[in-house]
Image 1 (cartoon, rainbow, N blue to C red):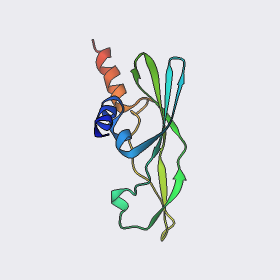
Image 2 (tube, rainbow, N blue to C red):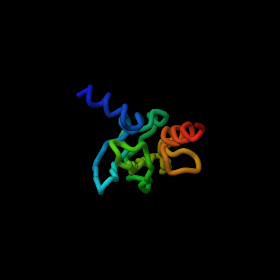
Image 3 (cartoon, helix red, strand yellow):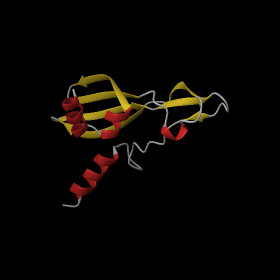
Image 4 (spheres, rainbow, N blue to C red):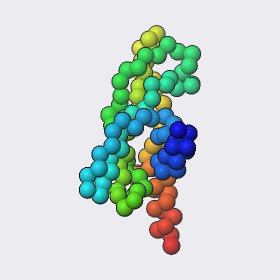
Length: 117
């Protein structure tokens, strides 16, 4: 099983493989939609707090590298937790999208690089 995980890390952004579950895949013509939900693992910076899972933020859609001639869209739902003591909402600070785009940081960097040639 470890070989599959390592292989998937080469295809998808590593943070997705490590911190999210792939819950659904849809292929529509030459477009692939991959749906991810953040794992219910409390952020390490909040380990000393009493947190309960409190649903998800709205889904975001990010375009990623094409795979096998197909456009790829990552649909990502980030989790949030509620601090039982303070009633404060807690979430991880993910930098999923390149600033000013709807592309993954890696894909945006790649497109910038090939545009220079």
